[in-house]
Image 1 (cartoon, rainbow, N blue to C red):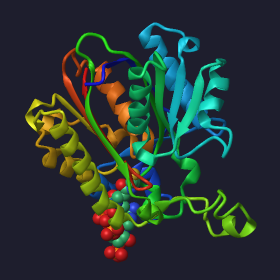
Image 2 (image 1 turned 90 degrees about the horizontal axis):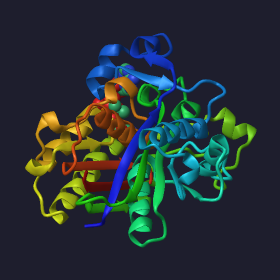
Image 3 (image 1 turned 120 degrees about the vertical axis):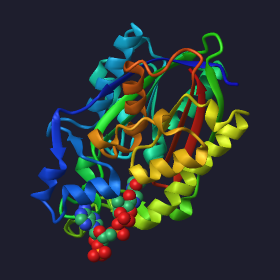
Image 4 (image 1 turned 30 degrees about the vertical axis):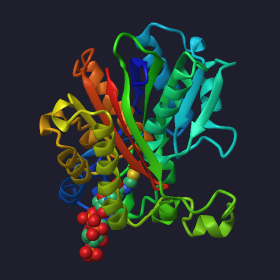
Length: 326
Ligand SMILES: CC(C)(COP(=O)(O)OP(=O)(O)OC[C@H]1O[C@@H](n2cnc3c(N)ncnc32)[C@H](O)[C@@H]1OP(=O)(O)O)[C@@H](O)C(=O)NCCC(=O)NCCS
């Protein structure tokens, strides 16, 4: 076991709510279709003057307040995001600026919706190796800026938000029992933002072609997501030498209720142990797991010694799962 402790969690969710009924007025869709096919009812949308680093800074502030520490006492800031403030520098650096802190290492993890679990894996290794003592791991996204609001196949799915966890050295038996992470870059074109990077720099043509927005083969993503997310968590449960029955709380990446259900069933975890914030927030990419974790923590669903299973999949294709003794 890798001895670490998530001493506090926090979140930041923009105020503006966009409901399925609002979307009915924007594209040819219905509340019934979105609810049945995805499980989503509404999502949050960042204000015009808010970028990803504002959301991340808000989540870190909340988590630090809950931990009773000052953000300046962190010795690492790891941000999982696909919707960076700028191509460079990192959103983690912009987050430092928004928090008015400096000195500690700050970096982004580009692993799509698996970004928070990738960040947690890195933070765990840094703490266990003695390199760091107190790291903020954040998942934050402003998906609304990379959505084609005329494409009903994608615009109904995503939302904005950020969640954070403060990770320190272990306390008692707390720690990561096992984890599983991986990627298959051959699947990159099934879910990506084509333009804006070195492959296809911004141009009038790229803007006209809506190439700066999410391009996704929904059905293909769906199939790979079920296999990747359930495979990662099943392997992590086995490596931890526990069973689905032993898991007290199950937090899958919140993209689609049918994918979450398939992963839960394959992992052998009872339905009442699964956290579901998807109806309220939609798919906030890297932010879904830390926001769900924070809301579970606030609701008192995690006690010392409990076993928490988290699992994710995302663009890349990436996947990850962690079994944590709380
Ligand atoms: C996107 C997704 C919800 C689509 O659900 P689906 O059951 O696969 O639906 P399909 O894509 O087969 O489309 C079925 C029909 O609904 C239509 N449709 C698509 N979006 C719609 C919408 N918002 N409202 C109404 N109809 C819609 C399609 O045009 C299609 O119509 P057709 O049969 O006349 O061509 C589903 O594929 C999915 O969740 N994929 C994974 C996406 C994901 O998680 N991405 C993030 C990864 S981190």
